[in-house]
Length: 323
Image 1 (cartoon, rainbow, N blue to C red):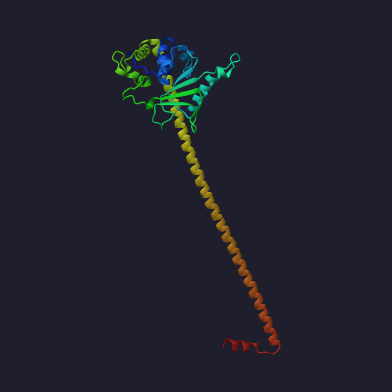
Image 2 (image 1 turned 60 degrees about the vertical axis):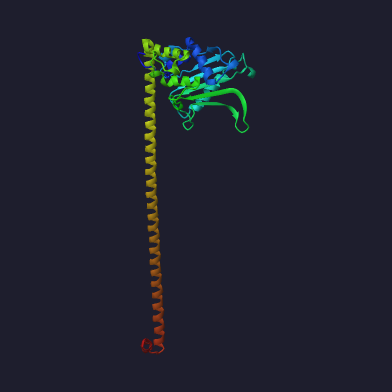
């Protein structure tokens, strides 16, 4: 190929599985991921929002998924997600619910008419990092009693980063995951055995069309630039959040240090106030002792004066006492 093309860039991804000329690839992909077999195999689909290059040209930040309905009216939604963020799980459930809810209209308002909705999300980065599994399947179940409330909700998560593309491919789901991870690096004229199938060759032809058709390649480049820009903005946002968190931590530490200094100052002031109170009490005690001494001296002088008036030699008595 003239240029390398990453199949998980949204415009390429939707051209692969969301265009009428590749409808057989969509059927193959859905049967692979859902594991349908025998009479349950999907044999035909109606693409509800087919690939249209205008939707990518008009809005570089648009979120483009693939919606389809198979022969038994079951609904399918497929989306590629390059960035993982905290609210992604809520968005996945919400998107499923909007498709399920949209089945009921004023003209068709019977709950019995509701059909199962399957959501398939291909994640470039894992939503569940600690689970060493590339394919997660969710539904409505009572975990304690192991019963299912309904089979109308099925959500598949395909975590590309958890898929080991160096091991032998065991099934068609793994073949698709290998394609999503390695097709960009392959030569369409010399494909490895894992990609040397009818479906994978057709998928590689779609990549070749984006590589060699100038209009499609420019569209691919514009979408790739949008991805780089979004990743840059996301990195800047995370760096800003980190800086704000560090600044907040530093401010909290500064406030805590000031509070400790203020507390120590308050304790020192209280100690000074207590020392002042103790000193005032000591002064009062000294004054009281001085008053009591003055009172005692006055009483002593009064008694000596009375004794002298009665002719008693007070001085001789004092001298004798001192001997």
